[in-house]
Each structure stands twice: as structure tokens, then as C-alpha cells.
Amino acid sequence: MEQEILYPTEKLKCWNKAKEIRIKFYKDYAEAHDKGGLRWAGGAWTFDAIPAGLGDDVYPITSEPYSATIAFDKELSLECMEATEVKGYPRDLCSYMRNYWGSIITDKFAFGYNKDGEFVPRFQDAKPLVFPKPDFIWQDHICCSHAKWYQVVSDLEGGIPMYSVDNAVGPSHELTNSKIKYVVEQLKDGIKFLEKTTGRDYDDELLYKAIRNHFVSTSKWAEACELNKAIPAPLDEKSIYSLYVLGTLQKAGKQVADFYEKDLLPEVQDRVKRGIAAVPNEKFRVMSDTQPPWSFLSIFRYLEKFGCVSIGSLYTFGLIGQWEVKKDGTWGAKTIPNVEFTSRDQALYEYVKYELHKPEWQHFYSCHFKSDMMIRIAKEWKLNGVMLHYNRGCEGLTIGIAENRLALLGAGFPVMAFEGNNADEREFDEARTKAKINAFMETLGAK
Image (tube, rainbow, N blue to C red; front, side, top):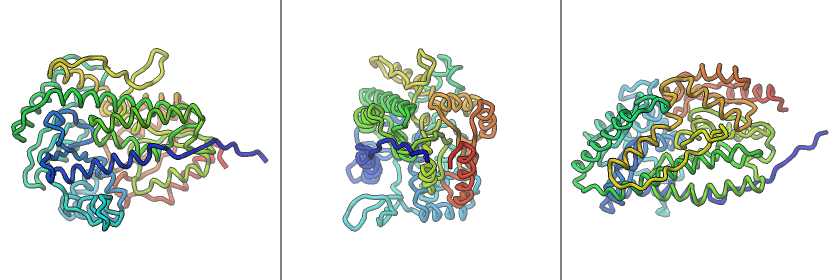
């Protein structure tokens, strides 16, 4: 009988620090007014370096990761979903959006204080806080629901001042100077909006620091994901979800930039050097796509029974991470711009030019761009197959997925498709999905 090869494995040393950063992010937002600070709401993709110029006591809440937190709490998520349905919002809208609206409608925050006075997620025996109302909304628009999402938030909260940036200027390979300046001018107008709304003077030096943090966060995250090309993979996707989320919270924040550069990246590099595996019995390598069904992350642990590791996805690599094609033709972390900021206009131009190359923005323009990136990952990360989530909860990232499947099959990669919803657990069949995994792994040669 063939003896199974096991790689050495160990827990991530920086795991607890990542959890501390995440909980501090929500605690700072909830307590901002108690400390004389400001709160703002916007999406994970918004140009979050801009509000940083208002001061060091300005705290955001980003909608998608907050909604994913609600989705993980099945009881609260169901309450939020049903509250939006009672209000007349249809179930075929973005499920993140419905969780977020439901949290406002029910006036229940996903975090609170437990009996020991610790700030923890609601499902950890915490009495939920009322939803902390933001002082202003700072959003961008590329997905069809982004700006409309916050129009409803503003209405539900009695009219919160709102500004949204249109950054849908076309794919990165068609960028022109005028397209970049179109977004830059909107950001300049947005700064005027922020000054008028908050009554604060804007500090360009704080802006420069925030943009630099953004460059570091997005490049170093990509560099960590690039290391998953190694066999065995040092990270598995279920763990990656808890790490990439920091960039979705505050990619322009110093604590996130420092964590990726000084904690996570060195540790992953060390794991590769020592051959430390995320899945000790790694035999098969796959990737997934779009957001997972957050209430059922156990399916990634189920894969491990077959010696299968999901190394990540275009979603986890490119939602926050920035990439470029290197001299040898492979995909690698985007080079951090080596430029000193000398004016607001110059800083904003470099910021926008850098950000408009975000991988997950490209396939809003064509499914073929996404197919090309997925095939690149499948080849360079040495995959045996691909798992595609036909995600009814996010039309923006799922549109064209049937075409992606055909392209991957045409490139020679086996594909397993499963249906579900990233944030509405009523639309995910766990038993059926596991049966599909069983059949898929058998086609890959697993016993």
C-alpha cells in the first residue's frame, strides 16, 4: 500500500494579530464619537486614502466585509434578510447589500460588548449595539449596485451626506491620461465635499501617507499570494479569507500596511523556505472564484479530506492585491511607485493611475479579461482543477462565469461548478455541494 506523504505544518504566528486588527477596526468605528472623531461609510473598493486627509481620528466601516461578518452569523443574517424583504426589497439584489440594509433597519450592529466588557462579534455572547450612524458616505461606483447601495443607506438613516466617484473608465490596457484625470478631478471635488461636510481643513501630508500605505498594502498582499505558487502551498484559502479582509477594511491604514509588510509576508516567506504546508497531505491544488458562501466555509476543510488545497482565487488575489506582468512573463506583485509627492494633484494622479489596474475591476468590462487572468493563475499556481461558485448573491463578480467555465475547460483545466449565495445561507445546499466535490475529486484521481 502506497504510504501517504505528509508535509510539516504549523499555525500562522501572526494569526492573533490579524484578529486584533480586525476587531480594533470595528471598535474604533463604534466608539469614534465618544472620542470626538468622525465615522464614514463606503465600500471596500473606495478610494479610502482620501478621507484620511481629514485627520487621524476619522474611522471607516467598509460595507462588503461588514456584510460578510453578518453572513457568518446565520441568526443575525436571517433577521437582516427578512427585514429587507418586509420593506419590499427583492431577494435577487446583492446579498451583501441586503445584509447591510437589514442591519440598519433592525438597528442591530454585528458587534457588541460581552459580560466582561470585551468588544466582540455578536455571536460570541455579546449584546449587540445599535447600528453606529456614519457622519458621511464616501463611495465609488463600478459595480452596478455600489452608489445605489448607499443612496438607500442615506435614506434609511435620514439623509446622510454622500459623495460617489465614477471610476468605470474602461480596462487598464486602454487607460489614457484623460481617463485618469477624469477620476482625479472627481477626487478633488470630493475633498471639497469632505471639507464642507465636516467643517475640517484638509491635510495633504496625511493624504500622502495614506496613499503610500495603500501602495504597500496592495503590493505586499499580492506578494504573499504569489508565494502560494510553492508546493506545498504555505496558505490555504480558508485562512486567506481571514487575512485578505484586512485590506478590504482599510488598505490605506498604516496598521494594515505594516501587518502585510512586516508580519504576514516575512512569515509566509519563511514557511516556503522551510516547506511548511497549509494542508499537510497536499496532493491536489484547486482555486475557487468570487466570494464563498460565508456560512459554509467548512467546505474548504472538506476538501482537505482528499488532500486538496484551494490556493486562493482571482477574488482573494485581486480584490485588494495589485499585480503586473514581470520580465519573465509571469504574474507578480505590482511594483510600488518610487515617487515623492510634491502636490495634491500629483499624488492623486499617481494614486488613480495605480488603482485603475486593479484585477477585479477589469472583468466588469469583459468576461474574457477574467478568463485570461484565471487561466494564468491555473497555470502559474500549478492547479489540477477549478471550483466555480455560481454566486447568486453577487451579480457583479459572477457575470460571465459560464463563459469563464468554457474558457478554463478549453485551456485543459477540469471545472466543478456549484450554486450558492455568498451572504444568504438559504440559497446554499451543503449536502449537494459536498456530493459534487466527491464526484469532482474522483475525476481528479482522489480516493
